[in-house]
Image (cartoon, rainbow, N blue to C red; front, side, top):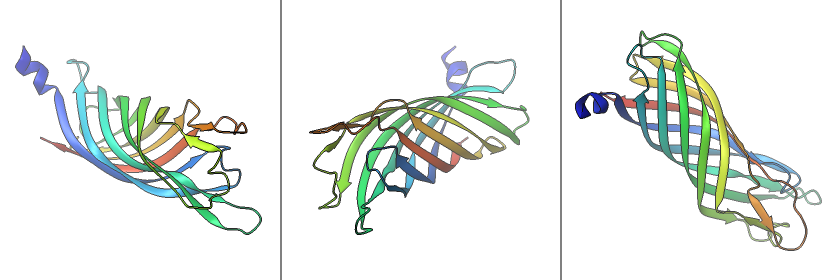
Length: 185
């Protein structure tokens, strides 16, 4: 029984690039170009076909944005790096191996570092929270279920910034990524 269960789990690695931003907090902002890298485990949910999977990832991702100060046009770093854990339902349109798929699910994010340029106008008020909860949706293409390319959009469900003196609104993270996954078989 355990051999059958283990045979349905596949492990792999994932890497990619993306554009991230945060709503409201820095007023005028510009997206940050970042990357993600980590490990993937995929579990086959049914034995009738190979269309339905549950995929869990542990990814290090560089997110955040650039804060633009209106008066002088200066650009300040407001970078946040996370360890994200997406839990994705994955549906393949065919069970032949070379096919398209859709994926979606929640994501837990744990802030591991932050970098703000000194003199950033709003840094005295804005305090990044250590946790982010997001929803991911995406799709991609699989080559023999060994190499997969995907486009995914992450949208934050909770406020990612607290404040010291004045309310900074409801700040949600977003991250549009293009990733490549390689499964060990």
